[in-house]
Amino acid sequence: VSRRVVITGVGAVTPLGIGAHTLHERWIAGQCGIEAGEAPCADFDPTDAMTAKEARRSDRFTQLAVAACKEAFEDAGWDGGLPYSADRIGCIFGTGIGGIGTLEANHTVLVESGPGRVSPLAVPLMMSNAGAAALSMRNGLMGEVYGIVSACAAGAHAIGAATRLIRSGGAEAVVTGGSEAALTPLSRAAFAALDATSTSGFSRPFDARRDGFVMGEGAGVLILEDAEAAEARGARVLGELLGYGATSDAYHLTAPDPEGAGAAKAIRGALADAGLEPDDIDYVNAHGTSTPLNDRAETQALKTALGKRAYEIPVSSTKSAIGHLLGAAGAVEAVATVLALRDRIAPPTLGYAEPDEGLDLDYVPDAARPLAMRNGRAPIALSNSFGFGGHNAVLCLGGVA
Amino acid sequence: MSATITAEQVETVVYDALVTLGPSREDITREATFEALDVDSLDLAELSQIVDEEFGVTLKGSDVANIKTVGDAVDLILARAS
Image 1 (spheres, chains in turn purple, cyan):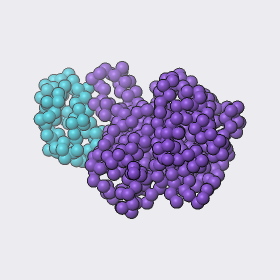
Image 2 (cartoon, one colour; image 1 turned 45 degrees about the horizontal axis):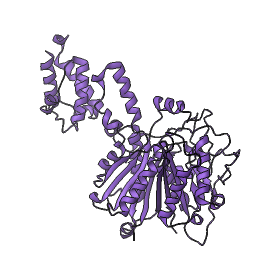
Image 3 (cartoon, chains in turn orange, purple; image 1 turned 120 degrees about the vertical axis):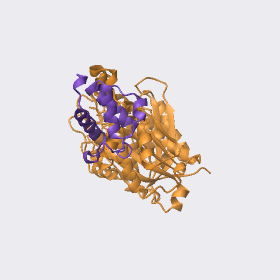
Image 4 (spheres, one colour; image 1 turned 30 degrees about the horizontal axis):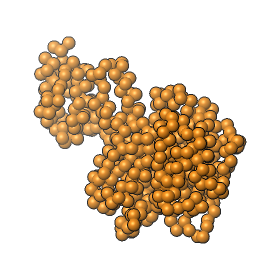
């Protein structure tokens, strides 16, 4: 029998504020963290979680990761010390782009002042594994540690890889998640050149008026532990990582397969990994980017994978409240899903008002609503993440009874 | 220009640079070791850039490896600048 993996702590820094619970409570209350077409973490001060020197030695994406991790450690009861041998704790952490702010600043220095002025900190700050390295170094995590890069699926891939590491017996626990801080001039211009970002400035997933994603920044961190080890230490369990499915479209650099075939296979894969059927699913946290192509393909993928069950369950998008956190999205949305399952609630898709032809699932318009409970068992959810390059990663998450 | 550089000028630049790298100003003295100030090889690489920009003095990794105190750094820069 494969080892079971439980979630014992969560942390997040998002455009709705500092803290996983801030994200959860504000999203459920229908509040939106988007302003003037972007979703920055305006309240974030890196020195709340690290010294000024550590902040100077971290790109913003790493600073966000460290702050979210600090909260997750406290939430898991790890802040007083690691519960397992350091060699048995890994860290697998995702980002879409890594330290692009550092890259841009140093490129400006290169052009204006020459190669001799480029900072010796440029490489260690911009490298995409800097988040994983910082979480390891700060907390003394000495097991398997590396970064994961798969655009907007990175956070979910990291959690999936972390789950498999624990199941394989390669670690007792893994600190995982994702982080992104790409609200920079080059990144803005580049996504705009692709017509990926919204010109209206509204994130309206699944709505007929949707015209692209709203870029946000932030980080989400989850502490995953082997279920037996967590039980032995008396850990409070928030939820369970029941299954993980990942596929690739092999179709196009940026566009999803219009039929959502790869995404549907990832959803079926996550279900099979969890040993579940479509009827077992109570909620879907959609990728729901608010781009014309994604939301249509994702809707089709859910229908293909779940059949009639797709029409019976609530499907909502965290991106309606915080925009698209790119490589952090899958992690932050997993955090939001775990807390939604805990409270037996389906958070809303904010701003959804005009149905689009063929996009006819229950997108939870207007307001959060209680999850329909069956047989008294804990609710189960899927969290979808898809990335440029055709990457599909789907998590199957379970609440606790 | 190099003929006019004084020890005070070098100290001012080095001390100001160190403050931006982390140490508190009151802890920075000629006798203070970089180890005690938590100034590591990456910090010294940044300090070398600042010194190059201010005084046109290039410090290589092998130079930096042999200096232990703030005073060592100031003296080395002064010697190179003259």
